[in-house]
Length: 292
Image (cartoon, rainbow, N blue to C red):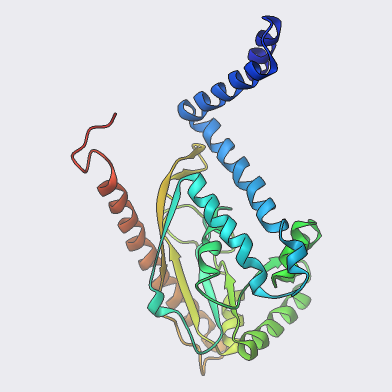
């Protein structure tokens, strides 16, 4: 449709400026009337802008390789991107942040948009790092940026090597008081309930004898991958009280997983309800105003 419009404008003797203006008007029209177009358009903006935010500052990152501080500027850019996409995050529970030791930060995993959540967390919780599959490292220049801000890469196909990496990560958390951010569900999940947790994060927490810091992000009511809908909206990031692991052994792994899953599941439901109530309260109709 866009191609046909541009051809018609050119055939009618229109200038390139007029053609571009017509194209922009068409894009604006499609953005407002088509959920599918808006979904793909916003995700395209998200991907391109995120890649630019991650890689633009590589020359500055080279001065202090493997430092979590290298991600602060990209994180700032991602927070501006959230505003551009119409997403507003509210963070609660600052008083629950573990201050005197490292910890394993567990976050429910909903979408690629979770990188925006990490951008909110990074400046609030110092010394953060993440684990990623090793294939990401080879996606240069993005992989290089990830390495420069301290991402820990593991070989998921080599179980023994991956376990050794996880064990050494436990030592890093304990000695450097680092905060390892992980998604315990292991895959994206935008449903109303959390998926069962994988064991990896809990092995690290027990190995390092440091607390688990649960963080629950309310369900992305503004996003529906099945219906290809990506609207504006709000989400709550709720930092929960830490769960201690001191004195626990591998024999306590299942108990720790069940306890953490129960706490996070309950908080996920409540936080989602709160975010939804806030959305309804902020609509023009709820405020007694007419929609224009």
